[in-house]
Amino acid sequence: MSLAVSELPIHARSYGGDEHGLVYGYLFRPESEPLPLASAEAALAAIARGRAAQDEAGAVVWLHFNLGNARAEAWLRAHAALNEDFFDALHQGSRATRIERDGEAFFAVINDVTFDFTFEVSDVATLWMSVAEHLVITARRQPLRSVDRLKNSIGRHVRIESSTALLHHLLRDQADELQKIIRQSTERIDDIEEEMITGVHGKHKAELARMRRLMVRLRRLLTPEPGALARTLARPPAWVGREDRDDLLQASDEFSLVLRDISSLQERIKLMQDEDSAKVAEENNRTLFVLTMVTVLALPINIVAGLLGMNVGGIPLAEHPHGFWVVVGVITLCTVALALYATHRIRSPQGR
Image 1 (cartoon, rainbow, N blue to C red):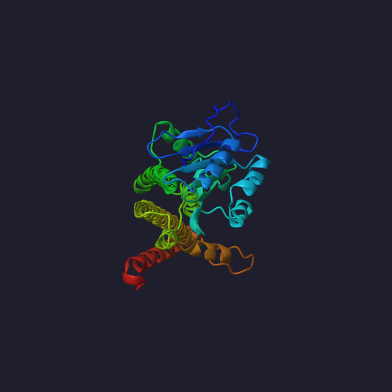
Image 2: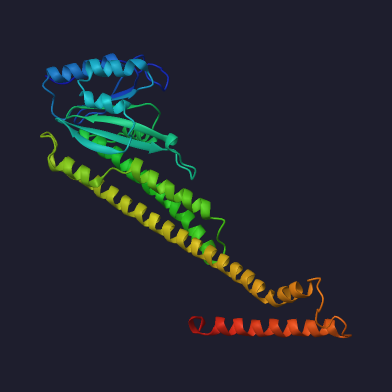
């Protein structure tokens, strides 16, 4: 018995999906074009007939839901046979990218961002996935560019040979997006570094701190832990073939490279911040030194002015016709002597 589905025409509907929140769905069969599923009812028929046919080899149903529709979660609970852990993940606070084994299926969380250099956590759109042998469920609250790219790829007759191929496609798109973000960040860091080499610094302090926080957020939200994926694939479900396992391991390797690039960027930013702080500290020390020297050189005139300013009897040279110039000469000699002594102390090794 072959897996069949009601080939209903796709009706016009909003981007939010049909009345059950189904944005779109596809049935993939070997040696056949992807068959769009017109509605949640058509998707349910595909799932039911596939189970009745004991899951025809190679047939995969992909259903993509909009969780902004209140009926979507209820439909999934009633018909998709998902574990409760999937629904718990929809409501928990953590949205970090990850891939875990969930019984005889994979559970994955994939994030997408609209990136600029003012990137905030609120700019992240999250996709929750359940990947079984013949059924892939994806759910989101905001549209994701990675899912749109996958749909467009299907429209260009890209073959989806298995359910893990869908997962691999999305992981590869996320790795590509991360690489693009890192490339943009690297170009900006190169510009800042060039300006700092030419002597312009200080004004980039806030931007460097912001970019360092950006790298931390990207690493936390977008990059899955390669070790966790490797542990998951060390004991995959029985239906995962060697080729699919190798593809997912390749995706893990790509993310490892991305992690290395992010770490390199973080280290570069840290070094630039340290250099900027060192230059600012050097300028502050130079300014403090000048102020200290001015204070030291002003000591003779302050002391003499203080002594001569006392309104008491017996002030020396008060009646002398050249008393003023004598005092000026004494102050000048003392100041010059003090300046020579200070200069000698500064130029001598270690101030000795």
